[in-house]
Length: 235
Image (cartoon, rainbow, N blue to C red; front, side, top):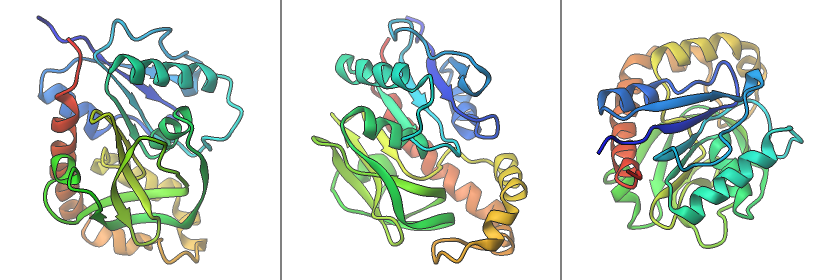
């Protein structure tokens, strides 16, 4: 049986699927991107899709965006029907809000690579053994929604990843980054980085110094994450 496509909700033109799309293609998993930033609506229902990915963006999960009610309803439908959801950064925040959680200012703004520690045995299933280094770019963070299990904790932002019902993953970080996306962000966000006084913000020269090595490591971790998540895809 052919696998149904994964629905990918893209909130911002500069925050596309990147390595997540690459990984899906490499593994023969079809996908369909919904350009919400360009006026496209989320799918009306999920029967035609095997999973749901919600990407990031500079907006807040608390903003009164016109498509948010439909997005929240779609996420809740996915959770009820056990269609796996994966949320990257803003996507993890939107998943939390859809499930009754909250989104508020993070303890610290985070930009750059950070080391995250596992806080539950189930973290090994999703991220491999031990701490992981992953890329951050956020000023807000989610609460862990009721019934979810926290998986990772960070130094500058405590709530970094959680899982719901063993199949729906919310993440505060950007494991989907690839080199083109990172170079674009560092150019677009140069002034934001330069002006920040947060201890969770790396300066651009520090990020660029080992960008290729760090990104390759990140993508190995992301491959582990996506492989675990894809086990739940509906056929």
